[in-house]
Length: 123
Ligand code: 5GP
View 1 (spheres, rainbow, N blue to C red):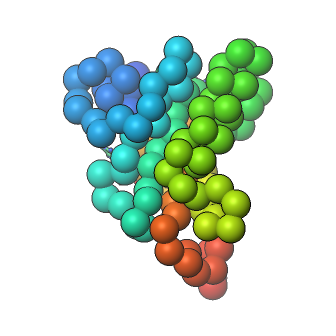
View 2: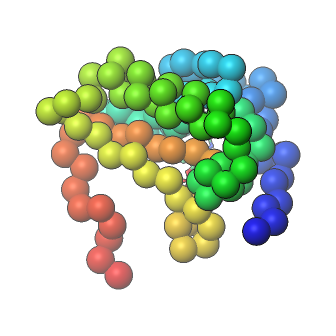
């Protein structure tokens, strides 16, 4: 699969410092920041710094170091934001047309702080 990455997408611009963000944590390979339109009391976005369009692109082509850094960072954020254990959370990633992906840079939504309802709307 050949993936095409648009370097002008909004998260690429955030990573270049062209647009401000409310950062939760930043590592060598990962940035976690607050969603500008939160859908829950906690709604953050975790993105790799590398140019990956979506989850399957990241999973197929990122280095082991990037993949480990991303997931360990997400785990730390989940703990730090009080979502681990009983409290719980939902991780969502949207891809392409069926997923209604708006921003074509891989991002994992982490939502919590309330009961989040059903996984998807009925069709
Ligand atoms: P998607 O629909 O692609 O999964 O989600 C994109 C998310 O990015 C949305 O939840 C939207 O609110 C968020 N978003 C879009 N533009 C910006 C921005 O400039 N800053 C931040 N922090 N979030 C954004």
